Image (cartoon, rainbow, N blue to C red; front, side, top):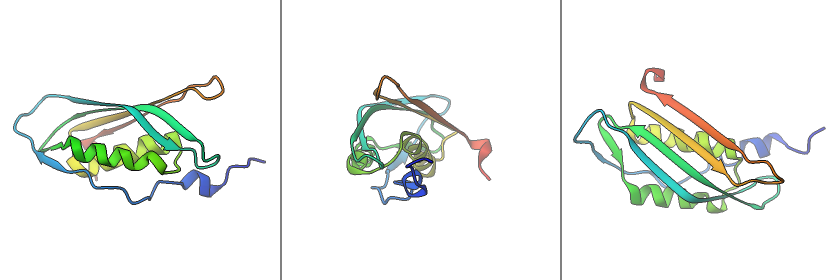
Length: 130
């Protein structure tokens, strides 16, 4: 039997985080790549810090992400207990909600733990919207 609980699995998914601001896009058909090389969060089971790099790529439609608000948003994860997989998917969901891009990809490259490195990629395409 695992020591992981449903509470561990859901940790951080619905945490209140700062909003991501936007500004009106002036062009079409290009890609924005944002790297956050010093991302930190906390393991919800052990309480130990997790480190990694978040890479966000998206094709803007009507809106672009405002970088200072994105920085404040990512800093809010610093003391948040959340699994790598949930970080990656939560960032994607929040970015999509903020800018409604043509498509977006978020990749979390987390530092090795016990000799194992995790890389998680979550993708969105506007055609997925309902």
